[in-house]
Image (tube, rainbow over all chains, first blue to last red; front, side):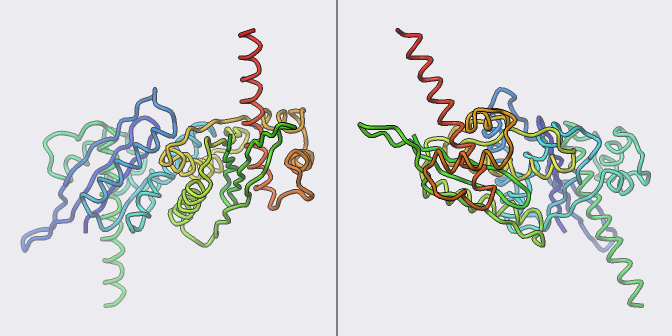
Length: 171
Length: 171
């Protein structure tokens, strides 16, 4: 399974591609790539959205994931921020749909729980565990890239848990 | 000048194309088309956004406007609604950018002022004036289509006012 995680933001939109590698000895997670699309505040909104769409579409085509994972909305932000974030998120969801991919959404709490085992974990703890789970020597930069990898890991853990539950039930 | 107005919504996204027709006798406004893209609540968000994008892109290609006019965000809504609205708005702005069109944004107050001459006008008054200014016998349906036409009219009036001010200054 190859998962494309997206962490939407109005300035940086992080992305990270995580693959489950299964060998006779082990099952491990491997980060294929990660990074962030940096938007220029001087550009007009429509141009910024076009940049996110173009870059995400190219990354999806390049890495051919099986699924896209994205963070559910964080409603504690104010309406103005929510609208701006929504604009970026809409374009990201569109890119996924145009690539024929399903989108799985996860709440921040679920992502932290899946990666650290604790829903109220701090940002640094999440980033540390992302590096550890992916066998990386350093935390991926920028933080938005690490967050996107965390979302992808959350999807893989959730899928594995659901598969395990299904296997348990059919016994 | 041909203006494509968009009134974004999570269920209905209205559109309306208004053209300024200048004859030796008069300058009048003419509605080329109007309508609404109706989204199916049963569809997944990404699919709904793809539908808005596909239909808006087709309409922009078909009617070849000079500019797109869109309502500025209405911040009195809550963050959850703002995010959902933002997703649709992001896709609409993307479609405009991809069509190589500039986007002009107008606050609800400005739109009402431009159409009715009164910023706190009621929705019905705006719709009545839209029909009157465009020489239509009935108010365009659904309401989202009339709202999109109002946004397009607002852009035309604003452009005319700016041109008049420029002419006054150069005297």
